Image (cartoon, rainbow, N blue to C red; front, side, top):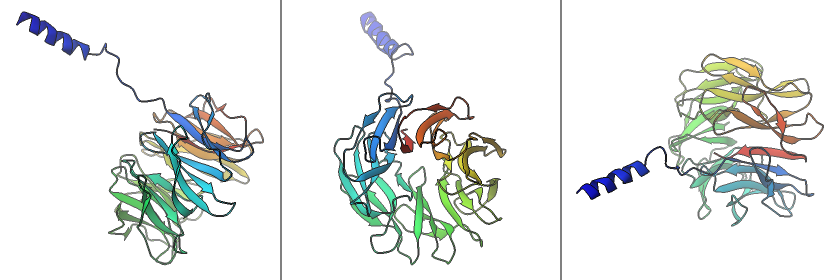
Length: 331
């Protein structure tokens, strides 16, 4: 018995704080670059090291999108210089396969939280509607089928609902539906355009861009349309507003003349911070998983390149030395 007790105690101690824990791979950044003469998908470590080309195709490959577990990357590919299709590959570029033809190139696409499906917009039947595709076998499910445009799908963090933009009632408004496309309901009603909905990490609110008060401003609202609140002025819809993973801040783009800059607003008290102030374009934001850094595109040195900075705008650093777009941080 004494020996058995010592063995049990030893086993328990082995599970204690001193034992190395199994950790997930370090987050990486995917991006598109034409450094080799064609737009291809690349990945790199968060400090810009180990830049690796993942695709080698004649078509233009852009808009990388990490799966929730970081094992796969979906991306858009322009076929023959005309239509776009959705493809997916392993994070190392292997096992490439096509999922959906005729996608809307610059529209929202998002993995389901469980990593089994991707929601997207496609003109499969000569109208821009929202679909979801099962990644395992490319099975496509149509979620909307009303006249006019349905776009900008954003999956709720629990995977049960999708927010989107529609003009089915004559004006661009926000809607929410179940993940299978049922129970579609309008949650905004005003004369100005509402678009670019993005669900908060906690799932209790949706941020979006609206023209309801003149200009274009940033708002948050609950999924039932309640508690509408304006949180920042002078936002553009060139890229979607981006919640920090901890849910406390939203990064968005502003424009002053020809100068596009990045700002962050703290949702709790609406305190906003301008992160960039360079001539030209700054945009295409993606947050680090720990909410401490932001990766983005800037043309401050006369070329679009990937940069990283602290979440307060400090310590900006260039990561790529070639023309680059669409950076995305894995989770």
